[in-house]
Image (cartoon, rainbow, N blue to C red):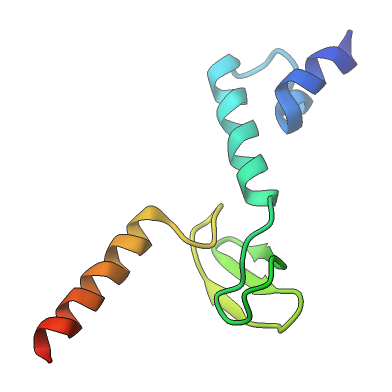
Length: 92
């Protein structure tokens, strides 16, 4: 029975029946997103791993950069990049 519940909840199965269904589901989604392959902004390979809170590094080229806590690029970071690009384009 324990194996069945673990396979449905993914990595959050370790919490058992504690903390509620929504919290366990959210944890499972966050951890799945964090552990999937991420593309290196420097070399373009899918070898980026999380080294710590907000610290990401490429396993191939060694490029280390700051990102989100659970994702290398966050939606807010993408918005900031677009704003900077637009501001630089206006200056020219």
